[in-house]
Image (tube, helix red, strand yellow):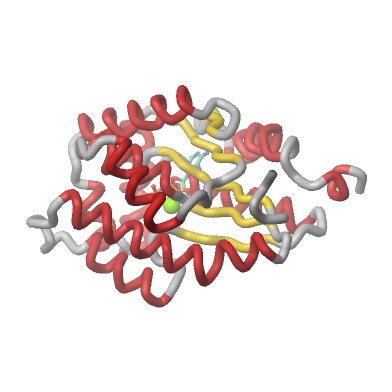
Length: 222
Ligand SMILES: Nc1ncnc2c1ncn2[C@@H]1O[C@H](COP(=O)(O)OP(=O)(O)OP(=O)(O)O)[C@@H](O)[C@H]1O
Ligand SMILES: [Mg+2]
């Protein structure tokens, strides 16, 4: 039995894999089908989350302990769950989230070495059994993804904000990818890899192939 009448979808993937781009295309498509969609972006969708995001991404905070990072992530996520995600799911809406706990499993659990068990324990404490019904994990060659994110940051002038995490080594990102592979092995039904290389619209079609199996039947009959 599902805990809420709504549908919870999350996007995952390494930096520059196209999560935000594909999330926007999916949200537009769902809305054009007449569905009500609520968006969540991690970290920072709430007022409190924005302040936490600033602490997390500040390059000055090089002394930040992995556990501090983990708990700040979950503090922000709990706030988003309470303010945005749970109310929307309770109303029966579709919630689409740019990253969720799988990011913490991959980045803090696997790449920073805290382990899945520690991250899952924090998740249970902060969020109970709240989990996406479907997760789209976009795959891209790591160097291509980082190059995409770099050129995007130059245009947006957002490079200082993203710097602390983007400066991590390629090896770190390889470990993140390994973390995602482990999640897929644990939860193959929920966690779906989608090829994130190629034309945006083509990738959006691949995403839709996965999502359309989950959207409420009324949209399919339109
Ligand atoms: N299919 C694509 N082909 C080429 N460039 C793309 C494609 N999809 C997105 N981009 C561009 O690549 C950059 C990164 O995309 P996007 O911001 O969607 O990735 P992201 O996974 O959300 O990144 P981040 O992890 O930094 O949040 C953007 O400048 C975007 O316009
Ligand atoms: Mg993004």
